[in-house]
Image 1 (cartoon, rainbow, N blue to C red):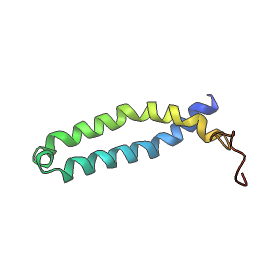
Image 2: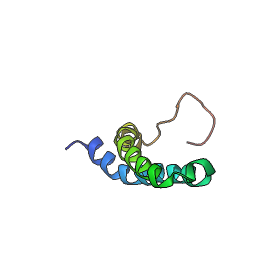
Image 3: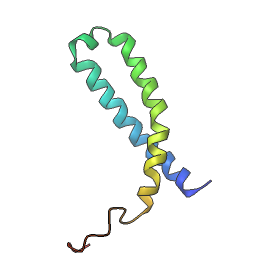
Image 4: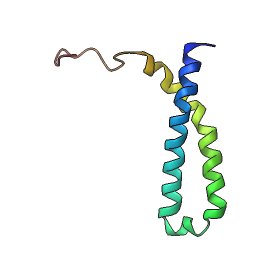
Length: 78
């Protein structure tokens, strides 16, 4: 297993929780969506599971780099 895959697996738990939370807040705070919550909550769960691996795979290399920002600036103590 590659290091990127291992980091993505660990990161996917947190990414999934955030996506699920954002989806639930959207569904439950908008009155029109809250009326159909029993149908939309499974959709939010499914979408969060489908989107999570892609976001985690994209974020994993950035977790390995110490400073992945633009290094062209000369100000600051970093």
